[in-house]
Length: 196
Image (cartoon, rainbow, N blue to C red; front, side):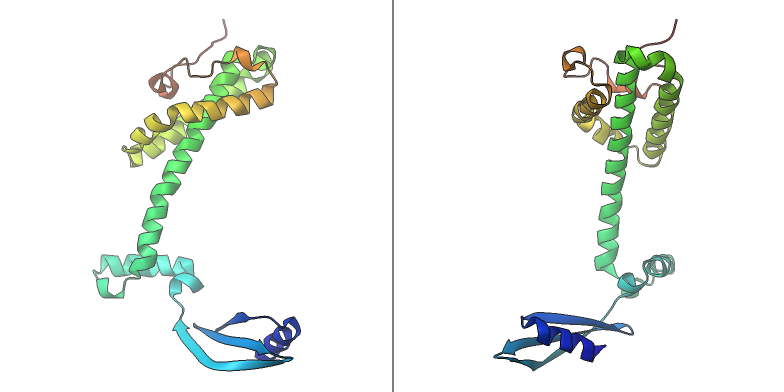
């Protein structure tokens, strides 16, 4: 494999770094091209790959074992911190997405009269589903309610765009700003229109 990489690099005639993953080590070989030939430098560095890079699921399991046994000196803190930060971002993105989809379906119920008779039942079911998803996230992380409040207007505007694209209705029909509150949107008994 090393010979094959060297052959490929000779053909390319450019500066590069080659990473070869061998066992649990990454070997980095720097080289440069001088004239028509390839000259390898003596700089070779070895770095042990972390379990995080080679087997993410096993890394998670090992991290949990280390935390439970209070074996803190073996923790991969850099990757653990990165994962914890990404969890918070993931939940914020998820709840914003559920809110946007919920608002989009409420707009369909309110404004898309030509499709309402055929689609109301499905839209109503989707509204319930998005509310349940939001409620589940809020149960686990009540502080996400602040994120919902902060993103309500911007998610409404995104939902409005999606609704207008799907319905091809005149944009003047749908208000630029929401005419209902976040409390109403999250209330399982509230809809902007109900069949008679």
